[in-house]
Length: 217
Image 1: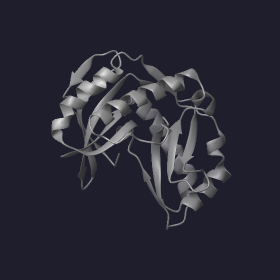
Image 2: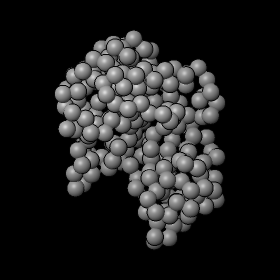
Image 3: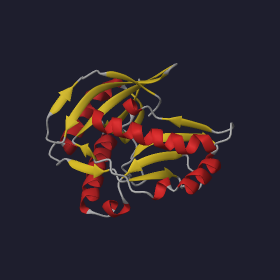
Image 4: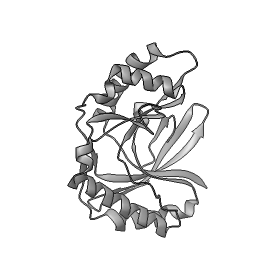
């Protein structure tokens, strides 16, 4: 059994820009926080767009899932997701996750519908391979930090700083391929191993076992 998820990888240039955003957030948030707060910042090298968390899966499913995902999205057209704002889940007043993602206007447009179609096709492919379908609507966002303790205090600081109200200009995330990642928990964090990649053009790159350190999925 392996722990795995499907995701879209980021370019090194975009990772570098996100690191700058994280540093700015740290500068604004952490000096205002009390000692009892706990914020886990995602390492830029491990930031990705999670398409579907699969959980524990049998290794025998790896190749059949590759075929299913290839058939589902192999003829889809690539989509660019603009990264235009900072947000918080479940809401800014008590944030547990800080993220960067598209504007609300974009989420109501045609490109957002195309991303949803790609996600739905992957959900259907995974369901055919024995995975439960996610019932929540898909929201394309990149997680920057997780607040473990002190959510309300972080919410107050965010409101005072106004950072969530300011537009960003980070370019866009290119949804050009989907990868299957194995996640192994180590004392220093998780290690991700790419098992396969399916490009939306229909091309497939198998077993690119590139490992990198990460904090979590």
